[in-house]
Amino acid sequence: MKKSLLIVLISLFLVLIAACGSNAPMSKSGSNYSDVSKGYAQDAPAENVADNSPLTNVAAFQRKIVKNGTLNLESENVDQSYANILAFAKENGGYEFNNQKSNNNSYTTISAQIKISPEGLDLLMNYAGTAAQVINSKIISDDIKSSYYDTQIRLDVQEKSLTQYYKFLDQAKTIDETLRIQSEINKLTTDIEALKGKIKLWDALISESTLDITINQKNDPLKPQKDINWNAITFSDMGSLIKNGFISVVNVLVSILQWIAILIISSSPLLVILGIIGWLVLRRKKLNRLKALKQKYESITPKNQ
Image (tube, rainbow, N blue to C red; front, side, top):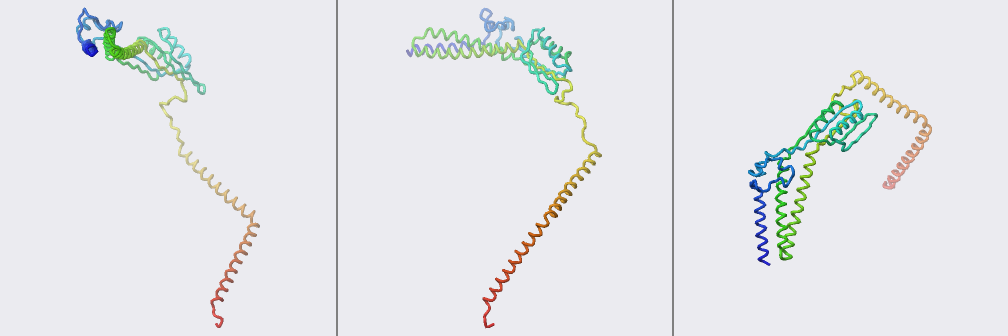
């Protein structure tokens, strides 16, 4: 068993060396990277793939451009302008991906995404400029060539390693060897599926552009204003407002004083009665205090005096 395990480990080491050496130049009689992707052999001449390492010759490969655009438009008739733009997109192989429309006080806004080929994106944006007034226009392009081909190379290496591991699996003689090799197969399979998914996503992004388009109705009060008019009041109006404000405050104060006077006069009989009662109470307290002082004085004064 130890001898078999040693053979398997040595074989794995040789596979790793073979995988690392797969990036080395390949002879014309050997396989090329066209097996990995249908378009790979078309992206680079056969002699370049055979004579140079793919990682060091990425510049010779076809560019992989992800191209998208944004448009902000204005129109007197938003619905009609968008219908014309969408019809033009469909005539050139495009389609509507999503659409959102809002109405606010009779002002219409449409925000949408249109999918179209990269070649048709420029045509669509140019046509949109004739269907409505262009406020902002932008095209964003990203060349993912290096990442794309590097991922293809990694996929090729992983698939070759997976093939070799299946051969090892057929040669396994113990359960332990089988489990070890199967674990590596599972890991390689997961990595391969992830790489294929990434390439598939990139292919979709490369083959299809997205145009984010927004059309606002002209004279929409909610849209940002480039020019702001001076709406401050004049100094004459300011003086009038200060005068009117001062008079209003004085009127309020006078009204408060008048109501206080009315309240006092209206309640004067009650106030007189309360005043008399209060005076009697205070006078009685004063008399009691004088009486108490007199008694105290008499108590401390000798009788023979």
